[in-house]
Length: 202
Image (spheres, rainbow, N blue to C red):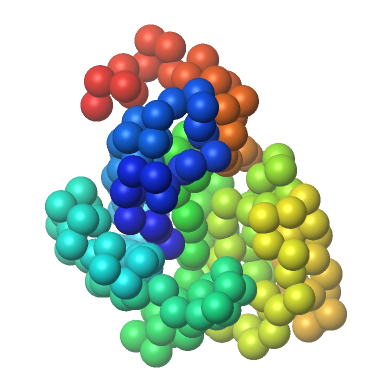
C-alpha cells in the first residue's frame, strides 16, 4: 500500500527536519525499497495506490511486473479489507499487506509471516511498530470485521487489531517489533543507522 510521493502530500510529518521536496524524495525511495523487499518474499506484487491520480507518478518509480489497484475505502481499515478481498479474488494466499514506512525491515520477518501462514500455523500475522501500529498484516484469507473499530494512527491500533483477532478466534502470530519513519526523530535514527551503508547513494 503506497501513497504517491508528491511534495506537500507525502511524509509531511518529517518537516521541518526536511523540506516537502526532500520528504517526497524519501517517500519515493522508500516505495522502491518496499517493492524490492516484497519481491524477495512473494512471486507477485499488488501495488495498492492512492490518490486515484497517483498511478502515473508511481509507475515512473516502480517498474517490472506489477498488478496495480487503486485503494478503496473511507479509512485504513476499509482499504485493508478491500485490497485483501481483491487479492483473494485473484486466488492469492497467503496475503501479506505492507506499507512503505519501514525501509530497513528485515526480510526474515516477512518470510516468517509468509511461511507460518502458508503452513497453516497461524491465521493472521501482525508486525508491531514501536509507535503502536503495525508494519505488516498477513492473512490466510480475508476476515470481515478484523479491521473494524480501530483507532488508526494511534498507539492502540496494534492492540485493538489483536483483540479483534482474538474475538474472531483467529490464531495470531506476532512478529518481532520494528519501527516506522514518520517523525524527525525516526528519520534521525534511520540516518544514523545508514551511515556508511551507501543507502543515500542508491
